[in-house]
Image (cartoon, rainbow, N blue to C red):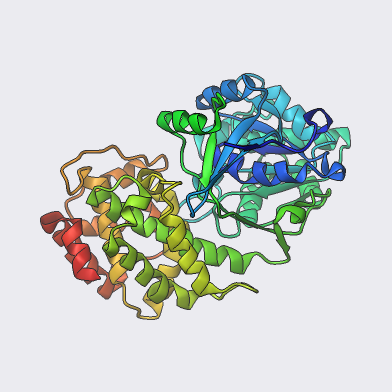
Length: 477
């Protein structure tokens, strides 16, 4: 199969961006756009220096270094036709466990104009109840007390900015690429709270010299399993230790608020705007919320691949009814966006056989996803006395998934909830279904105050336990 090589000499590329969190989504999204941009000679100061902070990153670091940081990206078309791109925009890769000083020095370097982040929805260290930055976290307390020996993303960036300020190397932008509403505002709150608690002089400098644009990112990018590596390499004919694959749809909308300059990403399809709110709301409320809605019922029905679940007409109708009836009234369409077409495209994207995303990936870290994707619109639905059937069924399914760890077909499974608290675990283990509604993920709404929600939720909890997910879902649609 033909491989699209990058159209520039990598020796001419200089790092202008430092990115923290070199995972699959980053390598399929920001790196892809930047790789396309670097063919323009006037843009070749915008290569990306990758940073990994975790001990568990050792494998990806070693794999990428073994192949000169290049890797293949397979873009899977909904029409069954795939494209393979060789990506060369990752210019450097620093592993914090191995060389923490190099990260600090790089953040301080005058050539770096932008720090980008994919640290996950839960990575901003916000308290689930108050939505304020948690200064009492043990790792945060360590970094506050040991500025020159950071271990967290907040500690590293603070120390790097402190050196940048001391060296007189100018302003910088911090750009979140995580799936959060107003992700720039969230990043600003987290980083400035940390810095204010650690170094008030630096905090004053940050107010004048760091901007935090909001952005909206979108591209379905599954985890790459060992089997995927074999499959992708067979298709490409390249022995790639770190291949990535993704869908053919991609979108990136960014508020144009870059204090130290930026790449001309608009040349390769990125949209710049003064306010990203409408785009964020559309994507988080329709795509991400629908992903969460389909994840737990699909998993409990025994599906392990999203495209397989989307062959189930009851799942498709469940999702489409949720989009049309529950969510569309709260989603004003952004300029030049056809909302009906957008929703139909989402259904096609979820059903893409070439991508074949894992349902377990959608189930992962529900504790962080519910507050962002589900609770904001649920609040409005309760206030407006809307039909809560589908959302109540989702909550009952989530409880069944977390509590019993056996699907309708009798298959047991492990859950992955990195931000679950000890109190959450107690609430899940309780035999009183109402206790579950006090989970940290749901704290923004007192669900027990909604009689209509409680009535539906308790009914579904009982029916799912006694009849199974399949039969209950059929009764809903």
